[in-house]
Image (cartoon, rainbow, N blue to C red):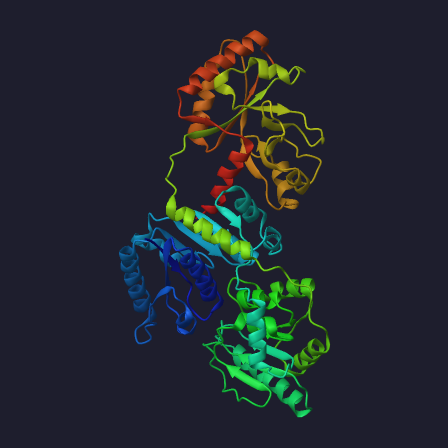
Length: 553
């Protein structure tokens, strides 16, 4: 049986480990692959109840961090070589430590990427971190991804470069029976539950977040107990909690780790949580009123995300102040259960597992592409659209044609004979179109074909009113055909494909009559058939340029 290795991030978080276990258990249940989780977690709590094989490296506290890191990388390299995984699955975000591993150099790699804020995604993209993966599964919907504030270039790369797909949020969805049993365990008399969770309990910065959060909520619990309120509090501190000891009382239960956390959050009337990706996803699936207490975060932008979630689903965003938290908790306890919540994303997990199986069964074979050329024909002279179709020979059936655009933005470039098939390009001269770039992109025009040097007015038009996603810019030149001198154009093609990838040339046929154009294009077609040149459409050109946005280093 083939092995798949799941490399998970390590540190103070825990949600990524829970997501890895969720995926690994689904793979194991299929019975066709052997999943192995490779981790360096400080706590093994999560792994005690899973049937999946886990290799957990120890944290080497007694040696310098540099030596510990080098040792970890060396042993990890040997372990992966011995496991010989058919697919390597990475989680959360690209990790530069894996780039130097010889054992991973030629293996299929898949990244399951949880939400990243726009600035962080942009930074990783411009560092070339996504280029190493065969597939990147984004654990968001396209709409959620767009709300993160990604740059136009990042949005274009995700749309056009290939390899990216949206699978929706991945988190455990407890069954009604699990929720009922968990509620009965913590509130046997039907008391309303207030669940407090600070993620894994560690601090992204040494600012005592866990101590402040649970200390403040302890005072809230004390005040409600003193007045005889029925509410019960459950603190799930996380295994890395290092704050002051928390004392259990008649209305307060403290757990360092709760394997049924998803069911507990679903059973709660009020959830006071650090809005990390996993805990917040699980809380949203339940009925609890949300009290979100962001902390310093790594690549997540928790404050902005928490504000968006509250705007959509209700609740409050606040700091760990006991007076404010008391007010928010009381508001949540006084209201009926929250009914607005997302659907559980069972399909997303199935799509993720299917993608892993496909990579394991049919690892993508590399291809050395031929030189790619956008060959555009311009009929000129007021000729009808079908004139080009009658003069173009068989070898040139992949050419493009310049056509007037009914919108008035300017001439468009589209496949000959199929002007509405797929993405189109817009031919831009010295002056930009009258429309804003976003209007152009919204018409599924993904490519702007400009002069060899982008005109200053066009560059300013793109810069001052940037579209999202950004349109790709393809530089190209025009050759005016002369009777019997196809060799002039062929030299231009040879120079263009040697200099640019992809290349773009427009051939203006306005000076040729029907017979002359047919002879000219016949010579061009005969020559191109013998060359390592592939004729491409605007969508393929946008994909090539989009891929380049992932390979910037």
